View 1 (tube, rainbow, N blue to C red):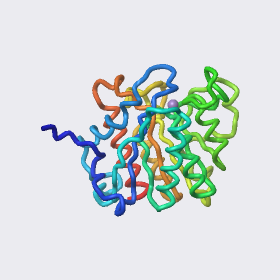
View 2: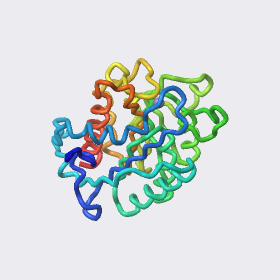
View 3: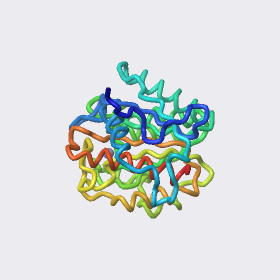
View 4: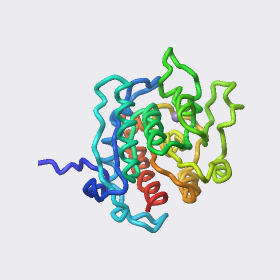
Length: 271
Ligand SMILES: [Mn+2]
């Protein structure tokens, strides 16, 4: 018999008693360079079991955070249906006071997440950590794609901030969405709930190479932890982590980094 774990580390609470709900969305539909994010939720769960539940950074333990793992959304249907169900799931979780942690999947899932959070709360700002601006209006004839997700999300929320971007197609680089990590406390509104979207490629590819579209010149791991700390004064209502590509992560270190970031984010934001 295999004892292979199916849920994220420490995510063993009954739903009714949990404060944080892990949800996988193995969506891989519009990737444009190299694939693999459909395998990411299970790779992240598996990698999480190599880590300790205690965080030295926040001096807290994940077992105290109250996690459950809802498994994966069924992605064997149209993109519209998937995003619609994700929107309803996220809205329902937030309406009952839980904090969704959504494991992608490609970045397109953020659209379902923020639509759900916005419908539950009536107002929302989005903080995207991403190497890419993803602000095209359409890409390869598609209006909903991982290359247009920031543009569509900007239409769905009250305020958008993008941190870590260093890959632009040109004119959008002068749009008002971009900020440095140090500007986050000043540029987010204190009175608006925040959804955090973490595209793993915001990290430098030297430390997290297993992503769909690696881009040199990224944040360090420590700089990313500083971003989580900077969010402590804000009302973060949920997060997603996207674009891990396990086929391009032969050492497994990118999946472990993703799992560790989930632990640190949960404990920094909601521990
Ligand atoms: Mn990206």
